[in-house]
Length: 289
Image 1 (cartoon, one colour):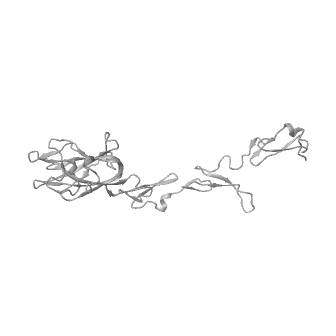
Image 2 (cartoon, rainbow, N blue to C red):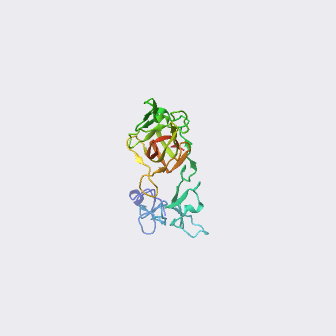
Image 3 (cartoon, rainbow, N blue to C red):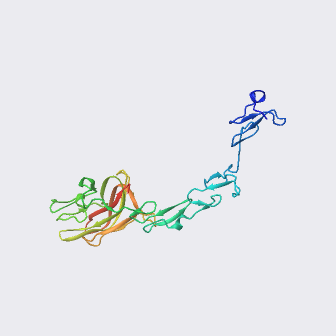
């Protein structure tokens, strides 16, 4: 056994860092291959028990060192959501009840998802998206409010404009009222940025001592202010009609399930008492929670 600079080892180079030896039996040369390589000149990759990968669902095959107390050549390191010798079992992540605040857990392949009741959201329904966005408080400015039409009363001197449609607004003229000639009235708020909306609070008002309010309405939303989508009923693929008010002063709250992501939101009255008169507040939060 000798390591020679000449003869066969001078011209027959072992590949992949193999060491060339001569004088082994009758073979002109012999290669000692580094770990992971086999073959006469170390040009073949050693397959081993991890090739092909015996682990399912993208499990990682890891070789086990030869020890007297270990009777396997490899183990499978399973990704989250799987277990078993070969990661063949999809675990039921819902068994640990990860969804909070009344969320419904849905077991999916290798993971879970929570169907959250409004105003909660997040992976486990742990985020409460329920901030008053500023109709009553003034954070939403007059310039951010618009409507399809406006009612003018008392010889045209009283303007019931959209900027007055603020929850608990006071005064003789204290709400938005659409024109009597408007057959498809709406009022809109531009939030100036994309936000999450989880609900709405509505209220009517009195005009000349008479109660006026919106008894039922639809909600539409948009990211660009041009293309609007009506909020759909969860159980049926139709526009949802929300229950409105029964008098001028009591507040009626409706939650959006699921929450809406939008910059523009419109309220479309579909049934009104005397006139479509409205004060309202929006409930939601910033996109980052």
